[in-house]
Structures are given as structure tokens and as C-alpha cells.
Image (cartoon, rainbow, N blue to C red):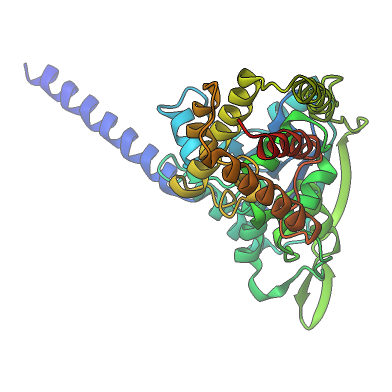
Amino acid sequence: MTITGNMSNMKRFIALLLVFFSLSIYSQQIQLSNRAEISLITAGPGNTELYEAFGHTTIRVYDPLQGIDDAYNYGIFDFDAPNFYLNFVKGNMLYKLAKYPFPRFVYSYKRNKRWINEQILNLTQEEKQHFFDYIENNAKPENATYSYDPYFNNCSTVVRDITKIVLGDKLNFNGQSQKTTLRTIMDNELPQNTWGSFGIDVALGSILDRKASFEETMYLPDHLSDAFKNATITRNQKKVPLVKLERKILDYKELEQKISFFNPLLIFSFILLLIAFITYKDFKNSKRNKWLDFTLYFVTGIIGLLIVFLWLFTNHSTAVRNFNFLWAFTPNLFVSFYMLKNKLPKWIKKYNLLLLILLLVVIIIWLLKVQVFSIAVLPILLFLGIRYFYLWKKVY
């Protein structure tokens, strides 16, 4: 009895000692060796999904003496997360930081033939440790999730901000605003005449058309990489480059978003010709195609309703002040049902004059660059103008 009891107590003591020892090791911060490197990783764009069109930014921590070679990826999202789509629509986009082996990161881009560029940062041992400790803390499950914004808080801006935190006033980006806008920068990466670009231009407002500061341009990975290349660190009253070594990890030709044959400009131009032809026939025959009118009013009203919803009832920072609502006029949704009547009420005449004035305002806003609209909106303005003018002049 005594021997068995002593053995049991000894096993329990050893087990507790092992647990304590393991926890003490785990709780200690990893100290990087003098061979450790922190790198900015920039990946080229893909051409399969819209979110791939702008490339990607990741942090790499490499320390051969500690056996560390990890990617810290701030661009992870989960379609299967609870209420993902509802949160996305509401503007509560929750992304997370994921830490995993860097070779796995490279493999995923190699499989898709997307280039990867590495910029090793010129940091002191203390700065490397500070950088590493910061992202390690971010990687903890309770800290990994963050509120994502595609223009102001994404995988690139997070890395910019971490670098500023670590280096403080020593960091100099040495860049000046190029008097460009967030939309212009985006259009350089994503061709305008694509459905993705058209959707973004319709859904987002004039905030994208204000002049962006130099740091705001870093929301795109390419711009962040260029900014790092030209940045310096002030040490002992001397400026040294932020990037001490740059190299290609994967060297593929840059992929580009393809413009579909059935692109927005082509489709809406075809609709323009069709509506012009129907309106001409209506004029010649003194008739009105009520189903065409119902469709135009109903569809523009629905689009307008979505624009107003994004503007007023979501947290999307760039959906406010969206002047697309002037051609996608929400009241059209309700007026559309009047258009099914054989005899229109008299106020429809004045209402169509209002719609024509709103289309004119859109053109003025466009010319003054208060908001730049998608090129595919031009045929939309034309076919709406043709039909509204006909309904304004024609009395039923």
C-alpha cells in the first residue's frame, strides 16, 4: 500500500512538474538570434478572383538558428464564418492574422504562377525583436481578428503601421503626394471595363476621388513596396535605407485581369441601341412600351435603394457620398408600378423632367471630378436620357 501510494504521488509530482516546465517555456518570449531577418513580402496579382487583382502583402520572419521561417498573413478571411456575408454587406468585415510556415505561403503562389518579391528590412537586433514581439502578440487567438477596410485598414496598411510603430520618428518614407486619388490608383491595377471595376465604381462614393496622401496610397501592395524601397531610417544623425536587400523569390510574368467579351461597356451600349430603336418606334406609332419603362424604373430604383442602404445603413467607409444615386434614383422603384398603367398620371411629366436634370447633374459632377464614374455609366446615362426625354415630351 505504501509503495504503491508513494509511486502514485511521485507520478503526480512528475506530471505537475512537466506541465509547469512546459508552461514556463511557453510563456517565455522567443529571443531572435543575430541571424534573424524581418522581410516585407509582396506577391503579384492573380486573375481568378476580384480580391486577387491587387496583389498581397505579408511579413516574413526568418531565423535559421531558432528554426523559424514563418509568414504572418493579415489577409485571411473565412467564407464559412458565422454571418460572414451579412457582416460583409454591413461593412463589418472581419479578417485575421494567420501565422504559418513561409514555404507553404510560397507554394500557394507558385501553384498559381504569381510572382513574390522579398525586401529584407535594415533593422537593428532590438528593432527586429520589437517587430517580432509585436506580430507574435497579434497572432494570439484573442488578438488575431481585426476590422478590415479595403482602403484604410488592409494587409498593406497594417504592415505600414507596424513598421511606423517599431521605428517611430526614425522612419522616413521620403515620399510626396502625387496628387492622385484612391480610385485612380485602383484603376491602374483593375481595368475599368470589367464587371468587378464597374461594381466597385457603382457601390462606392466620392471619398475615393479626393486627393490621397502619400501614406494612403500604400493601401496597395505595389505602392507599399515602392515606399519601402525609397524609405530611410535615421541612425546617429545619418540616413540608412529601410531595405537592405531585395530579391525575387518567384519570378513569373505578372498576371492581368481579363476583360470579358461581354463587358459592361459592350452590354450597356447594346441596351442603348435597343432602347433608342424601341423609343423611335414608339414615337413613330404614338405608343409607349410600358414594360420597357417599368423595367428601367424598377431596375434603377433597386440599384438606388442598394446605394442608399450602403451609404446610410452600413459601416463601409467609402460608400458614403455616392452620387450614382442621381441616375440610380431610388424613388423610381415606386414610380415603376405607375408605368404599367395605360394612362400615366400628369405628374409623371414633371417627374421625368426632374430625372433629366439629375442626369445633367451627374455629367457636371463627372466633369468637375467630384466623383469619377465608371466608363460603362455613359451608355446608361444616354439610354436613360433618351427614354426620360421621350416620356417628358409625350403626353398620355
